[in-house]
Length: 415
Image (cartoon, rainbow, N blue to C red):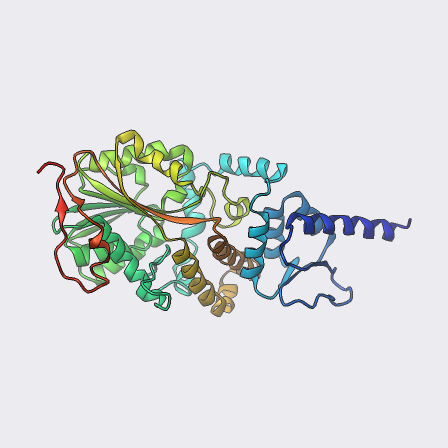
């Protein structure tokens, strides 16, 4: 057998292994090196692999191998990237990670540990890219978390405002209360609470770009007397406050630091306060994508619901409400991806073509993950053992949507 025949046989074996790994997924895959004749694939959705090294890397580690190859342009996707990924996720959901992926994932967890120093580096990598970049595809308030769609046809702007309102109604904020927010992003929720609910807010974040933007918005809206944006780690929070809220930060804490977060919450609101944690989760414990941690979100961990409760249980916090907004996040990501695609020329001018492909894959893969049910979006409302403000029913969550102006009814722990 000639060298060319041997190589061809090896390529076919690798390709067969890749195809078998995605089981019954209807995804045509072809090895078609640069310079060879055009692909014979005629389907609307297909994957074309351009070199032998990529074949081997995908067999060794489908997650990182595919992600890096797509980012570097060594894999071409013909058709709908989100649909291809969703089909693959459905087919591969029960398959065990390769030994290489488990080893690499463990190494990433070690080097990206969310210590005080590690968290600063991890957050800087993602959030301090450039405010102009995020402005290209987020809504006008710069909200980078799951929206809440009152109807499937609602706009992204309408739905992000509805999300802010949904959170405030869940917390049943009262004028004069003191609220602390851990991980405030560009400040949209803190600004909304201070402006519309008469509370004072102290919001913590370690992203310099985000904090600078939030402070400028507070000054622009004339509410600097009711809101303070603190450029510091959440571990610097101390009380007393009436309410604790965290939206989209738990994913950056790391499972090994949940006890620290729980202690911070208890230090902030004690046994009499209440709070809400909004986070990306999953149905059962598993390592988060190694490729996303390598290229997009260093230090990220997505917990199962029971893992997230480890933050609250040591301090005897009672869970009042749990909601899963999975399909809302899928739709949020659809809006983001559509806007991102319209801005790819400007993104490429900022960061280059590899960055464009990496973020396209991140947004498309996240959309597919929520559609396929690999990821969930949880909101947990909780209260301390002596908290006196506990809703009698859930009517307050939807009264505003229905146009109801009745005051919320409360049941007190001691009447």
